[in-house]
Image 1: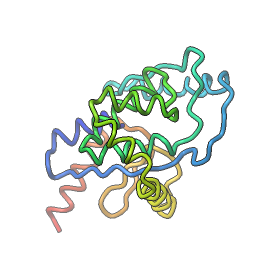
Image 2 (image 1 turned 120 degrees about the vertical axis):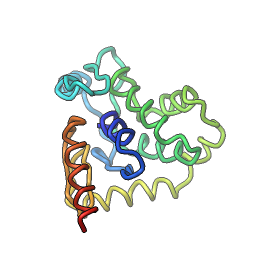
Image 3 (image 1 turned 60 degrees about the vertical axis):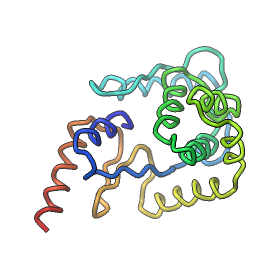
Image 4 (image 1 turned 180 degrees about the vertical axis):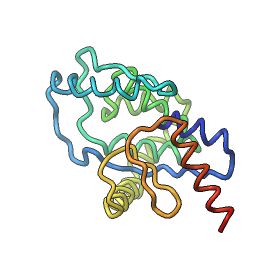
Length: 185
């Protein structure tokens, strides 16, 4: 979805504002057995089959799977403080979906920050800032109040929700309709 929205945003320009918010699919640490997690990641092949999808790979190797959603959500917001939201977000998603790296691990979070060229001292300081964790929880609570219960979910003007990973053509079509409605109002 991130790849699709990025493409559509480039096509339509400044009329489309994308604001990413945190949603915690797994808000509390919970170990998952490796074999069960591997079977779960087979479901990634459906979005991977889309023409404009990012890269996905069924979990392989023996690295422990991620335990919960909070650490990567906080890390993405910490990277945003350096103006690196998109770069870090995409790199962290690639680390998870394509490289099968445990994105809840502090080591992986730091490695991806280094790979993205972030100021590691500032990044570490921001990771520890409780205001970022509070913002993640606030984003999550806002989504729950809107009735969102899964990711991805795109919320458009007027609260219309598009749950699930969609292809660029669908995003483009719906966005064009929203923009047409704005102009006619």
